[in-house]
Length: 535
Ligand code: GLN
Image 1 (cartoon, rainbow, N blue to C red):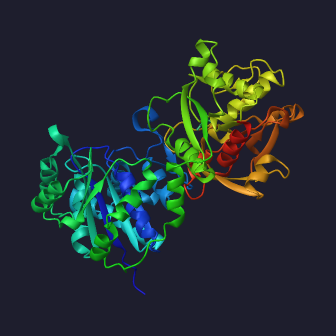
Image 2: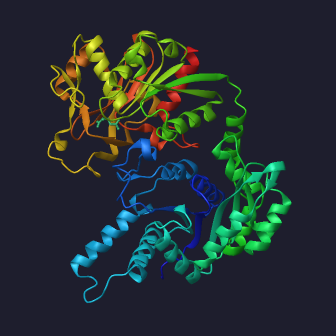
Image 3: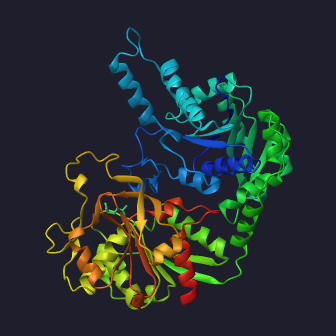
C-alpha cells in the first residue's frame, strides 16, 4: 500500500502581524474535523531559536508545553483547545530546528561534494518534515500555519517550500489572511490587500481564499474589489469580524460557507458539520445564566496579554461548561509586598497562583495564599503556585519560620522546595527542565481523587524544583494532604489543604495546558464549582 497523500492547506498572514492566524487556522481545522476528517496542524516559526523554552513571557507570551516535553509557541495551545487533540514536537517547525538539522547533516557528510543551498536542501528539509507528520498521523488533511507575515525575511524560504508543495499537490489550498482598514466615513481600503496578494503571487503562489480582518463588516464593494484585483471569486472572500469569544470564529466562517469553497478545491465530500456541542458551549460563553465570579490571578507578567493565556482559557472552559461568567483580576504580586492593602483580594471568589521563575514577587504570592487559606477563599496553585502553597503551609502552620524554596533563598534553614536531583548537573538552559507529561498516582479518599475519579492521571510539567521529600512527613503531620505522587521518584505532584481551610488544591503540573473547551481541566472545574458554592 502506498503512502496516503494528505490534502494540504496553508495559512499565511499579510500586511501585518497580530491578525489572529492561529485562531483562523484552528477554526478552519475545526470545521473540517467536525465533518469527520482527521486534520493535523503544523506551525512554522521563522525565529532561529530551536524552541520557545528560552523565551521570556514578557517578549513572547506563554511557553506552551506538549506531552512529549516540547516547549512551543502558544498557537499550539489554540490548536489543542479547539481540536481536542494532543500534538507533538514534529508539529512545530522552527528556523532553529531546520538550520540545526541541516548543519548537522552537512557536518556528517550527507551532502559530500556539494554546496548546501536554501533550495533544494533547506526546502527539502521542510518538505520532509511535513511528510513525517503525514506518515506519523495518517491525517486526511494537514494544515500549515506560516508564522510571521508574507514579505518577512524569516519565512521567505519556507514560502518557497510551500510554493513547491502547493504546485505539486492539486488538492492543496492557500489562505491569505489580510486586514482591510476603514478610513473616514467608513470607506474600506483594499489596496494593502491587493499589494500583499501581488507579493504572494510574485512568489509563485496564488491564494484560493482571502480572509479579511476589519474594523466594520466587510462591504460588498470591498469584496468585489478584492475579487477583481486578486483573482479570487467573490464567494472565496470571507469576513473575519471581531467576535465575543475566539471559539465563535468557526461558527462565523461556517455561516459564510467557507466549507463549500474548501471542499471544492480539496475534493472533499458534501457533509453536514457536527458542531452541536460546540455551539452550546459558545452560546453559554455569550449568555451565561449562573451569575458572575471574580477570580484573581496573582502573577508577575500580568501586564503582558498572553503570558497566562492557558490559565485564562482554562477558566473560560470551566465557565462555559458550568454556565457562569468569570471576570479575571490580573493582580501584580509585588503589590502585596509593598503595601498592606488586601482590598483587591477581599473582592475575590477564588485565587490562582500561577507558575513562574525567579525571586521577584514571591513574597506577595505567599501573602495571597495565606489570605486565601485564612479567609476561606478557594485557592488553586499551579507549579510555582503549588511550591509556594507548601512554603506558606510550612511557615505558618508547621511553624518553620523562614521556610523557603532554594530557588529564592539558597541558605534557608528550611529548604521546603529544592532542586530535583537530576537538575544538579545541568548547565544548558534549553529543553533541560522536567518537561512534558508525567503520571501521578492519586491517593484514594482525597478531593483530587474524587475530582479525577481515577487512580493514575497524566499532566504536563515544566519545572526544576520539587517539594523536598525530607519535609513531607512533617507537612502531613500538620494536616497537609499529599493527594498525588509521581511514584517512580516520589515527587509530590498534588497537595490539598485539610478541610478546615476550605478549598485549596495545588499541582506541580501545569494542569491548565490540557484544558480544552470540550474537555475542561478537572481541577479547574472543581475550583470554579467551589468558588460558586462559596459565593
Ligand atoms: N520556578 C519553579 C521551578 O523551576 C516553578 C516553575 C514553574 O512554575 N513553571 O520548579
